[in-house]
Length: 185
Image (cartoon, rainbow, N blue to C red; front, side, top):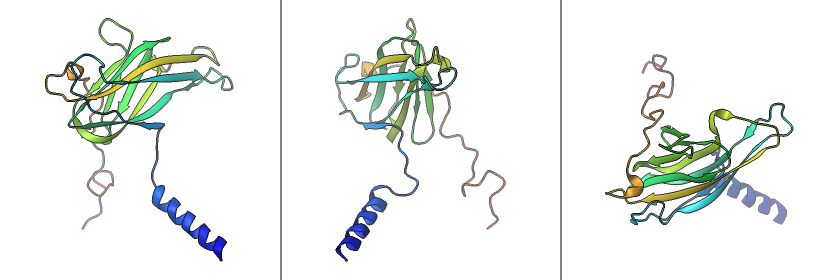
């Protein structure tokens, strides 16, 4: 009886902690918002490791993927400080808005500045530009600075990256069915 009760408690905890439909892409990271004004101040530096598979013909890229807390009243700056290959960053917000950058002006290092907006977990994907695979078994690295900043006049928030895809555009109607296929009510 005690084993059955323990099993039921563990099953109930599993349902509560991991509800159906939950999915995570990489580690979850947060940064304390800052009002400091110099570039990348109060940021967290993360070492991104990207490899090409040695078992897949052509060396398929295994990207670096994390989720960062972003949005709300703060801009978010994702800045590659150093890299050993031409990398790109792709950032996807909770509403589906996508930002993509592979080269900032005058440098091959990517930079994405997400303006204040929808708060939530933003998926960050770092990989070689244009899916370049190189040789199988190659290891690439990038140092990524992640920071959240008070946007009013802050140098870290200037020149936000224009979205590649707007999250407001949708092909689904209110019911979740493709437009024109919603059930009559």
